[in-house]
Image (cartoon, rainbow, N blue to C red; front, side, top):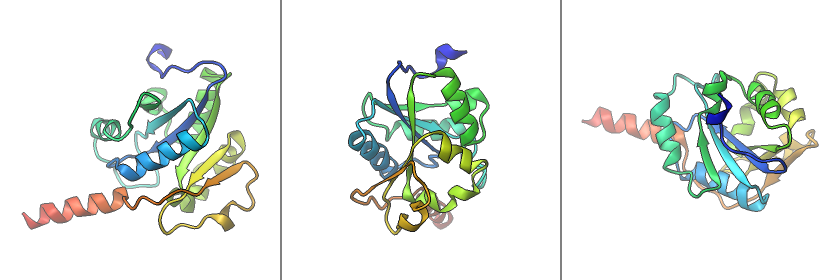
Length: 180
């Protein structure tokens, strides 16, 4: 089964950028590219979630994979269904599995600052925060400074803001469909 997993070599630094990507958009690309460049990562793996437990039912998985591939630009951006293949429904499970499969790879969790608001709702969030460094990329309207103050292994990257959000794109699609 491992042969279908993304390639990674000992000593690599890989950003784990998980999400529903329902749909993927330039804001996602901005977060991933900012982390890739500013942290000198070897790769960013876009982990397309089988189903985010904190969100309503997602669009079909294949559609979201295709959507993510449309915005993950360049060879160092890897869109993967590894969470689905591993049967991981939660980030802590994914991190455990990846550290077992790739023991000599350094993983870093990458997220947009908008996801920080619900981080403490994640199952085993303390384990996630303790297991690997967490990098937060700024997003419009979110100031995480107070939320990060108690975390020692977290990094906040200020960057230009990209306004796109999946929720707004889904709402616009529904409104457009209703007008027809």
